[in-house]
Length: 206
Image (cartoon, rainbow, N blue to C red; front, side, top):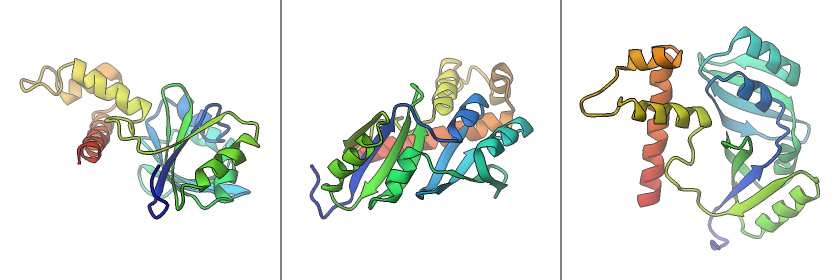
C-alpha cells in the first residue's frame, strides 16, 4: 500500500463496459486509442486517436454521440452521455489518465487518486451500480501492458515476418500489403506501439 502523501495509481477493469463509443470503434477494426477523458455525471468528452474515420464509423458514432468533431487528421473530439463508470469517476476525487480495451473486450481505466482511502470508496461506489468491475491498486508496468489489441497484433506480426530482423526479411510496404492496410497507417501504428513498449520497459526497469 502506497503512503497517503503519494498519488495512488488505480486501475478499474470494466468487464461489460457500456461506453457508448466502444462498440462502434471495435467493430470498425480501425486502430484507436482514447487518449483523454473528461468524465461528467451527464456527459463525457473523449479525445480519441484513430487511424481513420470512415463515413460508416462516423455515422455509427453519431448514433451514440452528441458531438463528433475532427480536431486534427487523426484526433477526434467525441461527446457522449456518460456511461456508468464515467458517472462514478465524476463524483470522486479521481483523474482519468488513460482508457484502453483489453483482449477480452473489457475496458481498463487508469486513474490517479490523492489518497489510498479513496480506493475502497471507489470500489463500493462501483459495486452499488450492479455492473461488473474489478478495482486494483498499484503499478501496471508489465512491458506491453499499455498496447491496444491492434498494436499488439501488428507488432507481433511484424516480429514474426522478420521486419525487425537485422537482415530485414520483409519491407514495410510488403508487410502493409500483406495485412491490407496502407504503408503510412502501418508505419504510424508500429511507431506508436514501439514507443509504448520502450516506455513500459523504462518505467519498469528504472
